[in-house]
Amino acid sequence: MADSAISVKNLTKKFNHSLVAVDDVSFEVPKGITFAFLGPNGAGKTTTIKMLTTLLPATSGTILVNGFDPRKSAAAVRRSFGIVFQDPSLDDELTAYENMFLHAGLYGVSRSATPGKIEELMKFVELWERKDNLVKTFSGGMKRRLEIARGLLHTPAVLFLDEPTVGLDPQTRNHIWSYIKKLNQERGLTVFFTTHYMDEVERTADKVAIIDHGKLIANDTVANIIASSGTPSLEEAFIKLTGHGLREEEAGSVDQLRQMARAWGRGRR
Image (cartoon, rainbow, N blue to C red; front, side):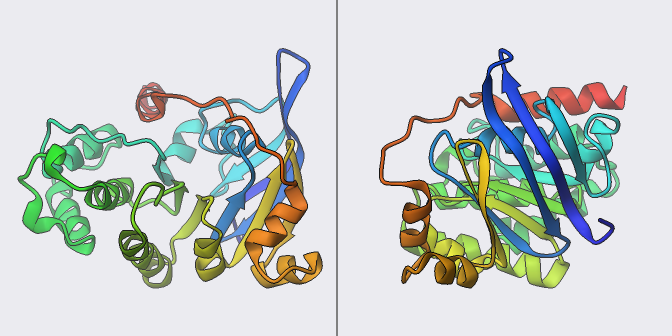
């Protein structure tokens, strides 16, 4: 759809021809909204995000990210989104400014535009005064703010956030979300995020999709999901939809950012 930032139709991913990690999933993310993609551990979230961000090919189905097909235009897809991974991906031995400068080079930001963009974004996340400090001296919240600024350097249309506030205290979580909401409201940035904090979803998401056992089991507003489940909160609705049992973690990449950088580099050649 022309007004969709992300369009997914009948998306399926199989491993070893038998394990179905994502099973015939379809959803749309309209431009300019905040979209929460939820599911228990092992539900298929990570696999879906890897396909959306060109790190993993789909077995079948179609994906469009900002109008680009990852199978045919992977480099264009990568240029059109920013991403903040759950696991820290900054270089602790570099300064905040050096981390930003390195990322600008990887994503092809022009040398003339780089200093101004770095200053603008570091001021936006209130880290400009710490630009010359080594990242290893930063708190967890400061690192996450820097990662968000870094993910916006190449002016993406979509920002992917994989559990952006995991491990942070409530005050810092609220601070991070204030930046994200400001980006969404003032710049029209489409935000696609995952989290296990249902209170964050209730406060920020325009729309929610829930995946379990590889299948999409809900795709609606927070209010409608709560109402249809007959529960008083999204957390209780989530548990009712997905069950009470413990889940194993979905297999993930330890080095996702480097994968992304290498893939993007290949796409430019």
